[in-house]
Image 1: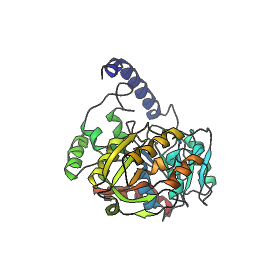
Image 2: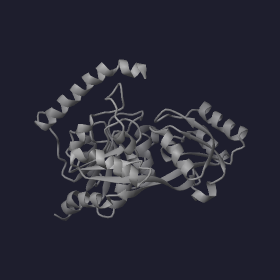
Image 3: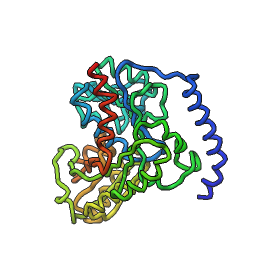
Length: 349
């Protein structure tokens, strides 16, 4: 905490830089590029996990029946640069090391969806259109303003709305909360209940932007490699070892606890951590020493378990990925209205 306090002057300088950059876009000194198909941006104003990828999945489920959809992402944590086609929409999927864990997760789950990663989002969007995309979801796109978007959705956790924080590097904010004025819709994620959403919505009223509330719930557990499914009831009361390398590991733990999963041990790794042999040996030892029934991780982490040692680990041990879903507590109609204005109507022209 003391170290972060010392970084406050740098946060002030960072805030000035962010403000100047945004002003350049507002005055069109820095230009945005339209790519000829509707673009919906999904982003956030803070670093760390807010449930953005599950929300992108929700959007895909809503839009895929109308459009040939593409997801364009930076591909954070990948070992490549430039344009990588994580999925060409025909089931041809790039290695996770080239595409990054979250794009790879989407490519695996939505085999008919085009997924392109590129640090230059305009170029990535143009590649997606070459592959046949008629609508684009720009993942993690709020700060990447060079690509024009027809709808701007910001996902912010209820906790970060209710609690104050500094800008980077003293805090976790990428942008000040005043930047929410650029949003067309604010999705309040990680709501524990309707009352928590109502409190967050009250704080957002000063921005005069529509807000919807979502809650993350367990859907099922899928055994990695075999894809054998177990429902939540089959895991309840069982002893499990849990591991994750995600932006907000505590929220994953809370979700499992709320579902009645008995966590014997929880190993936390850095966000986007690439697991090596030693990590997996530690997990196997914990599973055996704790006499656990299962090992559980996230879908995002499962995407990074793909080398020979990892496959052997997955074959020997009952390792399951928790599949989650987003449920609306309030405001689903607001999202549907935004999509109808941007995606559906443009498609009918």
